[in-house]
Image (cartoon, rainbow, N blue to C red; front, side, top):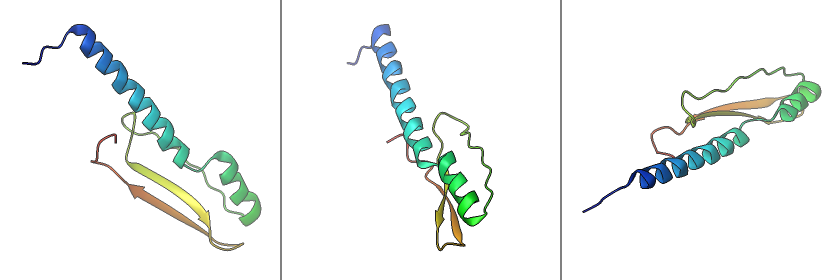
Length: 86
């Protein structure tokens, strides 16, 4: 027998919201920062504009940019959807 009170459910909801907020913060930290994008504009001449907004608090799509040489960059994108928050 499992009995849940309203307080138990409220505590669970609060914990889930905290977990989602932490996951969202971690996800956005993986995206290129504005100063990184500015570096590529100044050093390589690549202008990049982006907007990232997942349809829910945490999405599975991410992108990035990395230098290859002094005149070339690599863009990459990946999707990690369907695996839950963890």
